[in-house]
Length: 306
Image: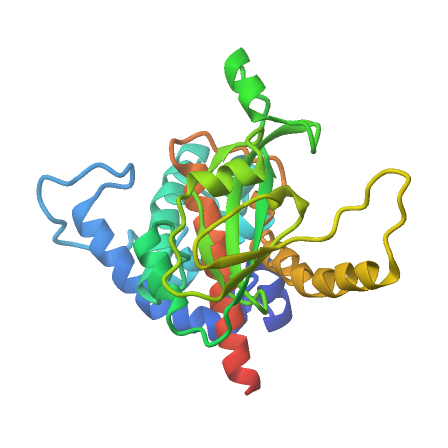
């Protein structure tokens, strides 16, 4: 499967990126790939000696950087089985697994170089907030389906009463427009409540006047320098006055943008479908890539349209 032979419309459908966006990532991805290949094996083990020859083998099915970038983006976007990928690209299943791990790390590092990864520690998060003139941000929890764990304790921890499935969860904070994911927490078990997950992050906001908009799951949060705004809850048997309903509607019209950002992250079907990868750290790594690609697309397309 050669990227050059694919139409622009189909290429965007298969990778979530336009040809221009792919070219922009390609140069940095090439640099990251060469650096990684000199230091590590395909299985992620440090090399004893740097490689002298970095050219692809003549019989390699993934010839060239653009094919490698297409391979990893296509696998994340469409989420085929490794056997299917092996058939499409003429690679054994074991080699597919190695390429996915190696190129996935390269893509993550590439998005880090271009500054599109969300923060996951407080110091980075505070830096990301500084350029924003708006003091309104959106917060929500993101659940992802996983395979039913074999361990009974893990089954209980990962069972989500909301989804009635086994899931994992992340906390995301976006700007007011939902265009940029500014903060992404580590992946936790799906049974953890959104408010508890928020409290675990130990947020410390740098300036006064910050407003966080969330749903009723975040009711009761009290933070210095922060006004937390949630919908007005309707109690059983009591009708809300019209002005409260209108306030809830206005809040929902703004807060829905964080849902759009989550949809942007989950354009990668690997995050939308039941997660199949079992390698340690894969849940976090793929979620970071999804958020980074959403930020990359949003920023580039905003620049094109202005």
